[in-house]
Amino acid sequence: MNLLELGEAFRIARIAANKTQQQIVEKSGITRARISRFETKQLSELGTAKLLSLFEALGRELYARPIGHGRTLDDVLAEQRALAVSVADTRRRVRVLR
Image (cartoon, rainbow, N blue to C red; front, side, top):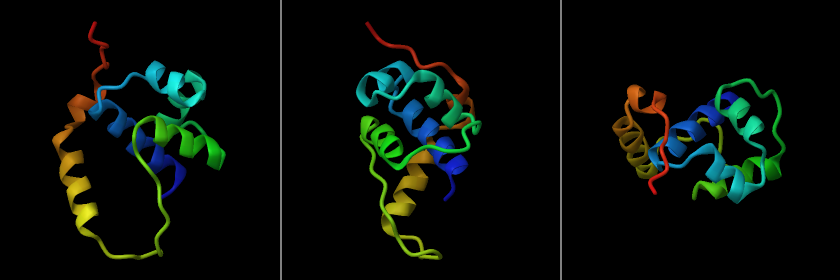
């Protein structure tokens, strides 16, 4: 998975979690502009600490596995959850409930 794919996966997970970019800013300390560029595939580089901080703020973790590793049960479950978030849902704005 490359940085562009990670940005897209992050955006989908953030919207599915009903989190705003601002909420991620507050938890991670990463600027909203950088988060936006990350999510829209406009960021060419993001340090490891920042990347980990973003996913941690979302309640996600990254882990390394061998290239070409087969799908696991976790992969299948993640795909099913991702499918539950339709393309239309990823285009809507997240609203903070008050």
